[in-house]
Length: 92
Image 1: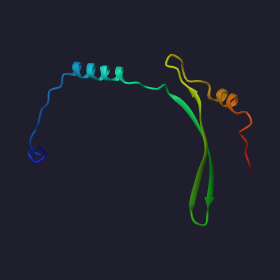
Image 2: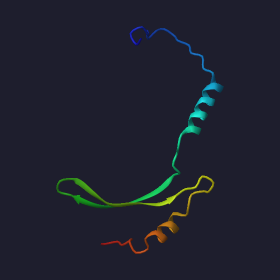
Image 3: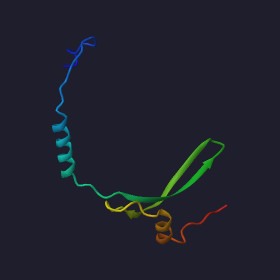
Image 4: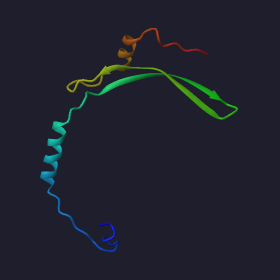
């Protein structure tokens, strides 16, 4: 079909907008969607200045919160403090 379409020819398509929207909404209603989650990851980063490289390693990952549909987003700072109050250390 691609060979039959000419670049100088105009084409017109009719779209039934109401049916299209109804079909999309119906399809979305049938989909199983997980609630949004807030995920925290812990990584270690190493900088190699001589090689102009940056390496990282993922150490851990966890779900801090699952959002409910009828609630707004949680207070991230509060969730962070409750989930791991001693795991935030800064080395210099």
